Image 1 (tube, rainbow, N blue to C red):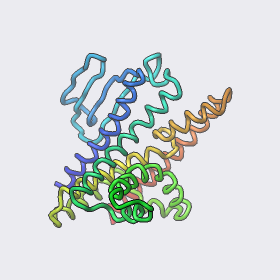
Image 2 (spheres, rainbow, N blue to C red):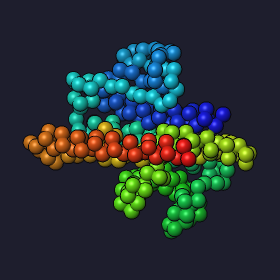
Image 3 (cartoon, one colour):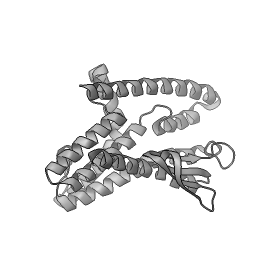
Length: 264
């Protein structure tokens, strides 16, 4: 049951992220070819009046939003500002979902992760504003701080950084353990909510890393495009190649760490 709940929470969080991209694409005139929950063979499909195919697929693990890429209705055919909003929107929706869920959970259970509470109590705020501060720190604060925290941990710990990192395998194991602990303590609802918050913040924060092809890599690429002038294409080509290489090494390291922890 723990793995099933983890899979549902993970898929819901990815759907929130992709729906953020979808909303921004629609608002900026980009044609969305398909919005899918899950991967693999289609179980259900329906096309709306604007040409978007809505799909539910057999492998219920995440999902995607597939836009037109080229031409006047494609992502690449839009202005830098429009593309910036599109790549930002997925992370923003994850952070909003985490903020609202954490705020509601504070009022419902009068509990929140201690790390968020400790940081909020250092701020000179009146007590009635503390729930808002805790929810903001635990969502938007940790989203925006993630790249700095990742680089700081990697600089301090070197390859030891991967011992504390978690990829898809690690997330599934962690989710199963969290749900099991919550069930034993009689707080399944609270455990699911906290895991949903964690996944949304983690998804937003990971995507903010300035590595291509993550959202953060696209955002930095847009900024480089604007400041590099006539050398933009060469600068972007080098940046994307370097970012993709680092991203590949990061993925290999995280998957190796997941497998090592799973074996041990």
